[in-house]
Length: 125
Image (cartoon, rainbow, N blue to C red; front, side):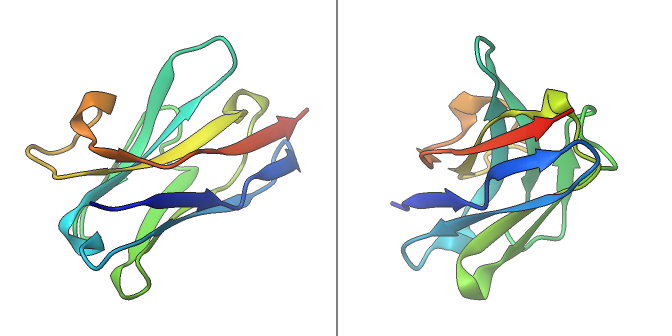
């Protein structure tokens, strides 16, 4: 089992950058494929991106490709989401999640076993 805690959210102007962190408890962080999702008010939760167990592979939603970068540091049990060129439509609660990665890439919420509590990102125009 793993517990996940996101941090780094906040208010930023359009065109700006933020880096989110997802800290995991336990000694098995490297056993999980790690993903980011987001949910805007009144909308469904959307897949943002995912990183493989050792960080060698990543996969992104088209809406963030080229602007967002996911990385992980297994020694620190932490995953990151670097968000550049932010747009107002990126405003959402961002969640990190852990998956056993039965297939690649896991893009659906039901493919993830553990979730963080979320962190708010607000992009002003």
